[in-house]
Length: 104
Image (cartoon, rainbow, N blue to C red; front, side, top):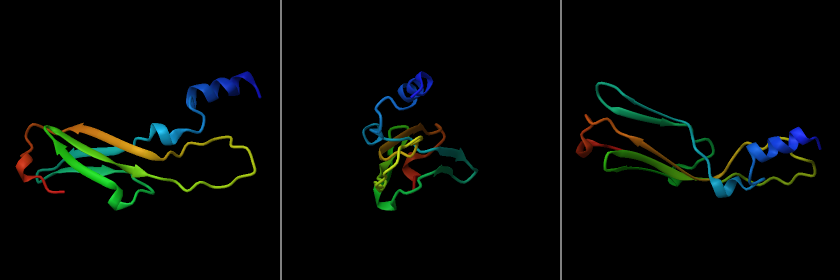
């Protein structure tokens, strides 16, 4: 194995294959229309029952869990980017939002 590849492993995967421990961060969009504030999140492989959206003070909190099926392989991984585990995203709501009128 080349030194460059080892260095790349250290930078991009400091825990080896322990992504379950670190969790992951789904991509989100939070935007406002004249009628509502909309949260859209990329949650592939996440079951609806494993997601929770709450308002805590002035923050909108999206959290949940994704587990990926472990596949048996007899080869060597060259790239492993898909993560599983707990995720949490916390976003500030605009001050204009009426927190009593929030529907989820």
